[in-house]
Image (cartoon, rainbow, N blue to C red):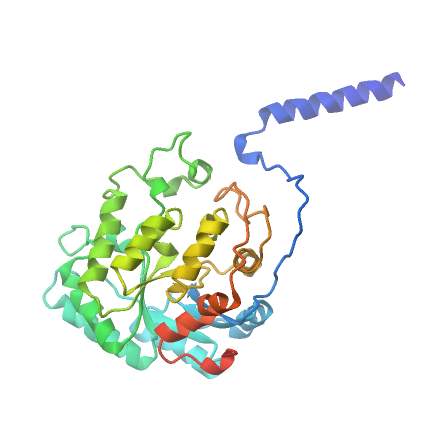
Length: 360
């Protein structure tokens, strides 16, 4: 009995000491709330993922992707990492030889020559060739506005007039531009107890910026919006809801101001899932301009998106604790809104997709 009591005391002491030493990063309590659960492993309607990245599509076995897509009910994957020229051709060749109706590839522009004579016209001409070869749109990475410099070493603003020929060419060709500018504003804010992304920044310190690194967050966002307004005939898909998913009132104002701006929901489902009533209102009001996208290709994470969009479930976990330590709630979207978000809006914006894959 004495030995047993001593052992329990040692174990209890160890557990208490470990609990005291446990860092905030490890705190991840299991909810005791008992509520109805309706997990969704497969989307209710066949969907188009307008925001995916497959960097090896020139050589990878596409049948493995197709298996995962079929399990999720994904009809078409849009690979935004198409590159340009021969690189793009190689990706298109693999797709066209195996699954020509299941993948769409967007081209990318190389900004390293901005500032050299006739660069804009040459870049637009190359984009036109890429589209003739099979590209369905243009993807603009966040490096524009953050890291891309011109030939003189100066930062290239998102609304730099030297890029105007590219946006004009997209309008002429009738292809959309999916653009990612900046990152969440919290990355620019002080990393203190008031920053709700503190845990993310602590575990991923390279994401932290100063208030002016490389310029203020609002400056990059304003550059993007000015560019949208300057090119009203070009169709834009603002990735990550333009980083305004946590301020849907402001995003609604921007949607009203910029009728050629659509938004994708990639990587911001955690923002929508914590404000289900307001988000539902927003989706219903702007149902013709919201597109489904996931960003990183992690098939096991898609069911959280489906559950937020399709169900009325309460207080269920997000899949990345460091990204969102709060719980999710379902928006319970009407079927017609779901169809538009899942595939109809993408079919309207991206030319040449196989409509026969979808119910109506």
